[in-house]
Length: 110
Image (tube, rainbow, N blue to C red; front, side, top):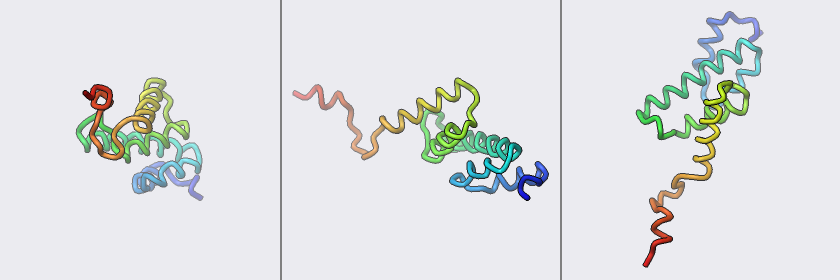
């Protein structure tokens, strides 16, 4: 039944779906996949605008990026590379415990 809805209705439904359920909706058919992809890009951009800093990624933004990548929604090679880099940096970089220290502090002690 979902695969027979008009595109306008699909757009409205997809816009209301939570981030955590968004990608699952893309499994209905090709129209849903396209609408979910469009909505995911929109949310990705909105998260960047909300924080006002393109170099700083939020958990929500990283979640959307990872799901899009894993579900073949990122077709641009440059975007794919950017997302893979951002996800790698997030996994292996940063300061997850909030210690606010750098390697130089440890290697340059007197």
